[in-house]
Length: 228
Ligand SMILES: *[C@@H]1O[C@H](CO)[C@@H](O)[C@H](O)[C@H]1NC(C)=O
Ligand SMILES: *[C@@H]1O[C@H](CO)[C@@H](O)[C@H](O)[C@H]1NC(C)=O
Ligand SMILES: *[C@@H]1O[C@H](CO)[C@@H](O)[C@H](O)[C@H]1NC(C)=O
Image 1 (tube, rainbow, N blue to C red):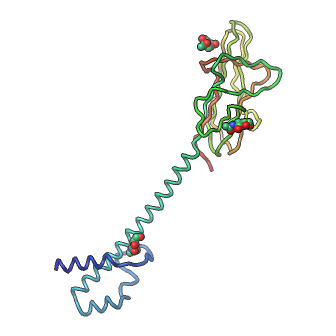
Image 2: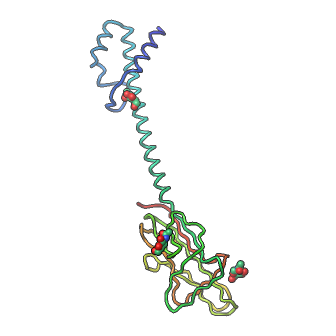
Image 3: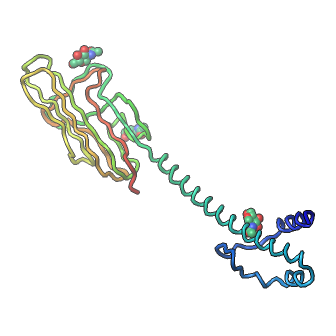
């Protein structure tokens, strides 16, 4: 009996068939359609048991094949999503300068070009133009910190700058007084941006920024999540 069972298993291992639908233990289109199987069942009871086992094994194989295919395709989908998230990673954080420098006040609006790069993941920020070009549509966190030092207490001081998207002002940290020597201000916002949008910082008329390698003036942005 043992030898017979092994033969059966060997035979079952060579059974091939098409996956025609979901697995069912109770019905199969070819249950009664195999003339060879009917013949064997009529002539040999033991062989019949073997054939039924072959059928069951074939259905199990189909079932496992189908489950495996489903798992493989969801794994592929997940891998694609992870790759797309990796490809869209975007974060920049820059500071004004590495040496002592002051900008303004000017009689016209000027771009502020941040030269010290903390991080520029995805190379969205251009240190020549000072423009961050949005690599992928999504919700971004943008922040701008301004700092100024008038040089002496009581001197007039207007620490300010504006963050612009495609030329339009979005927000502008601002601190103006004439009481002390140093002033600073910060804005942080989350914003929906489209791929190709240009984010930059302007120095409006009268604004004054100072920095050195302490990096008091920073401009940062990163993708929270993509929306395309
Ligand atoms: C199960 O998958 C294997 C490999 O793709 C294939 O050779 C075999 O015929 C399939 N079996 C059934 C019952 O569909
Ligand atoms: C930065 O912008 C300048 C001027 O448009 C351009 O020549 C340069 O190739 C850009 N740099 C990078 C790294 O894209
Ligand atoms: C940078 O500037 C701040 C304030 O203006 C000053 O206190 C500090 O000593 C400066 N750092 C250097 C390295 O000059």
